[in-house]
Image (cartoon, rainbow, N blue to C red; front, side, top):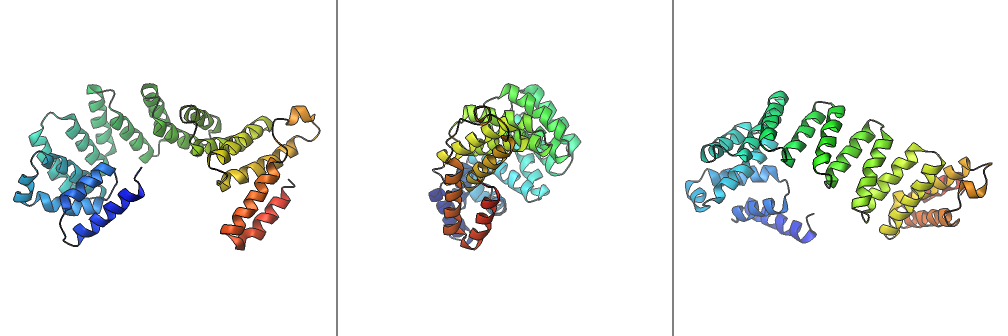
Amino acid sequence: MVTKTEETQLNQLEIQVDNGGGGAWEYLSLVRKLKVRRSEMVLKHGSSILSDPGKRSALGPDVWTLHEQVAIAAMDCQCFDVAQNCIKALQKKFPESKRVGRLEALLLEAKGLWGEAEEAYSSLLEDNPLDQAIHKRRVAISKALGKPSLAIELLNKYLELFMADHDAWRELAEIYLSLQMYKQAAFCYEELILSHPTVPLYHLAYADVLYTIGGLENLISARKYYAATIDLTGGKNTRALCGICLCASAIAQLSKGRNKEDADSTTAPELPSLAAAALEKEYKQKAPDKLQLISSALRSLKL
């Protein structure tokens, strides 16, 4: 993640370069280091360096890194001729490079030639079955083609090889949610919580899924994970506070006629009222014009 200091440094350098103050190579290097996408700027200043023989030769071996960077930026900007020229230069220098082969496949994908791109990626995977980037590009193609079932299949195969990739688990969970496959999405968030127990986003997402599935047991579990989110964020997650209140109301409805021990005896009874008070305080401070609305909604829940 880019820090505020790094972002400020990058923005200042970008303004300097854009105003003709020099430092284009330093700017491009910082963009790569921070792994941010400033495609138009990279294309503009990277192409300027590559078109100047003096500046190009001054880079030494780094000129090939710049070719790759400009090629990717050109694809983002739909400047396929520029991307093709950069890739041709790389092919000439590194004729057997799989990395360059990946760029070729990426260009096919950028042009919307999905079939040819898929063939190219499959061929590259035969040589290196553990190339994570190529596996992910195949998932991206399946999503672009509107084939979520294929994306799920590819992601599951990928996670058999790289089960610690939390981004892949999140992607899989989101696809399941888009297909209303909530139990499968819940499993993905369980894996994420096991591997990253201090990330509040995963607790919150898991609680949302459990609440959506419904049923007394799931609602009680959802409330626990909303509470965990509040704990991990220092009480500053409005969505989790709302979740506590909604769960309390739903649990009360489903618990009618049940023994108290069977219904719910695991949580402090004051939790819903504390969450409601925190919500009203939050709205009073940050959105006073909506305070009456949230107060009315909370009263309707009969907490």
